[in-house]
Length: 282
Image (cartoon, rainbow, N blue to C red; front, side, top):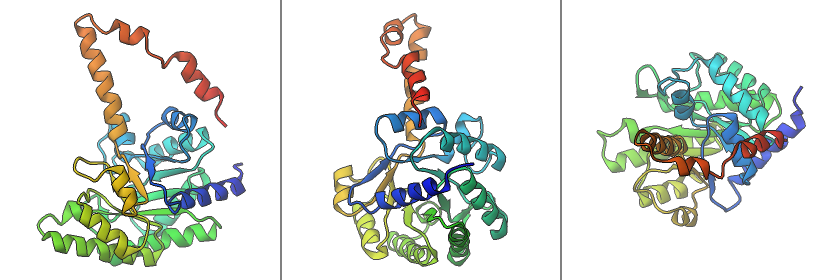
């Protein structure tokens, strides 16, 4: 049985990392070895990326994995490391708030201390009504309170994805409106995914008065600028996986031309290094 007091402490640490004044950068991972690597080099928390988890299991993103497969993978990750683990839970793998509550309890049992939760519907590819999403967030908060843990809720809003036909002013206004609604419902952080413009980000931070999470995309402000304007967290999404696949692709292409041997034989990431990650865990 897991040490629940320790899990409560991890949840508090994860919350505190969003209020430290230092930009929290999370290179999202998808399996235990990557989690162990980040822990080894000094990261204070782990977050997963739904796209990376799906792609590496041969699925498209968008809750194409079954919940059982998703749960199996995040349980392995949470069991592998001693630092907080937050997971990308997409839209909640749920058809009702009752089912959502059951899933949250299951994630807590697995050792997870927080989630991303989206406000769009995977079946219709449309934004949910903000009151419907607020009710989901309230369900998550109440479920966690019953378990006596401050489960971290990173409320993702997809306004910049599904409101492209609207004016820039209207998209920003709806993002802020949703952020305030989600905050009232119990969210700990607002994640306006694919928001890029400095002024939009700064206005959102100032208006919502909640930690804000920005995704690393071409065109966003520098890390130093994001910290200066009050952004609390930066996520990579599937970017770390893409970088790893890029390296694999480049080496594989070299090998097709009988090149790349030196890159293999002089790679500092040895089997001993990988074995040590696992042996030294916890």
